[in-house]
Length: 293
Image: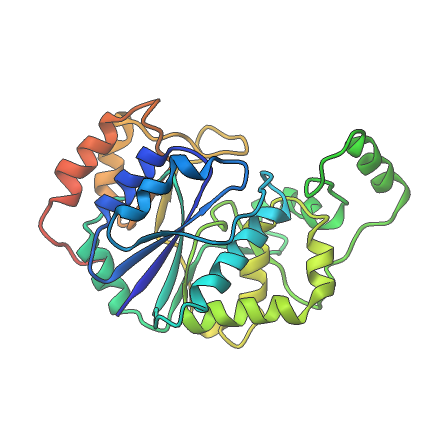
């Protein structure tokens, strides 16, 4: 079995080096998408590490815009086109870190070949997340673009025009942890092909906000692959501080990381607290193998 880990990055080459070193395994390869705004020369040394390559795909990413989702999809396409028989593509950020040994992670996915792992809620009356997130779809958002006066124009359009409607007769799926996932190869291929075959959906999504948290799960949960999808992305993410970004994890969170059944955690920032990563390395990644259900 072989897994391609796709890492979305725009800063912190040393932190990425630490991440891929912590996850080193003969069954893992690492593909790093470097935001087009970053200086590639600062990250070039990463390709000297085993199994690491920088993607030839490099898009200019704006936070919460469809540009981020597009970069993920195009990198997924690039990985599929290598001809390497990956069983899974695992999407990560450069601020993720494993909280289980690499071989535990490998064995977990080896037991679940053909399955995919996402986190989502359905767009239903009892979804707290969709209660506010539906505006991402129903209103016009100009985040994909960057020009003077864009938010005045955006506000005017939303005042003048009726609510937007998703262009397919689908139940919407998404959630605050929806950006990060692990897809089987066949599921990943379906995603890329589906977006190729639906240009109207791509155009619609250009004017949404935070599409990475709902578009991919919506496509896949309305696909023939729905029965293969597990609603758990196996990431420990702490949203307790509120706001649009999860909490940066520190040593105060270590015991919760130790107790977590998840495989990965985010997000970490060595400039805030590097000691927590030392503790993960010493006490979690070097621990005896433990099965994950």
